[in-house]
Amino acid sequence: MSGRDARTVSVTLLGKEYMIACPEGSEAELKQAADYLNGKMAEIRGAGKTVGLERIAILAALNISHELVQQQARSEQQNRVQQQLQRLNARLDASLKPGDPDQH
Figure 1 (cartoon, rainbow, N blue to C red):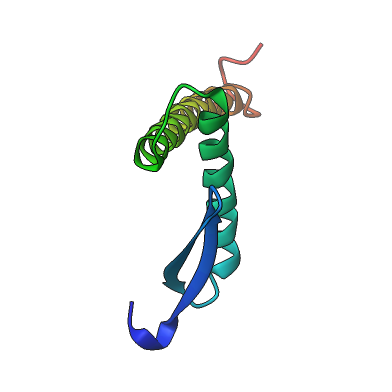
Figure 2: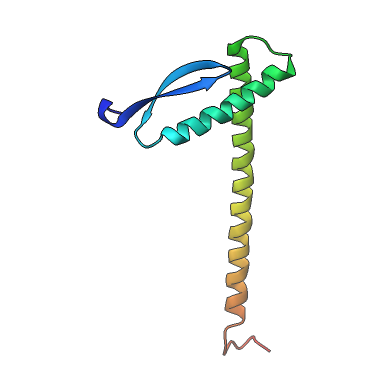
């Protein structure tokens, strides 16, 4: 990322402001990601079992990573089901072609 296509955006996590560089045009996405992270960090802090900003941030990152892994697994499973349905559909189409000698 060159200096010409980067912007510095202010985000707040648990009441603390951070200046983050991001590509021009991605500011809204960065703020949305920061809001999501802030929510996860607030949940962890609210549970009262974890102290220290660094530990809260690490636990939030692990929780978000776990969500991502679960979503990827669901997506892969959906892709496999979709591929299987497409194969079955192609077999059905092939077996139902007009003039097929196997057709009754």
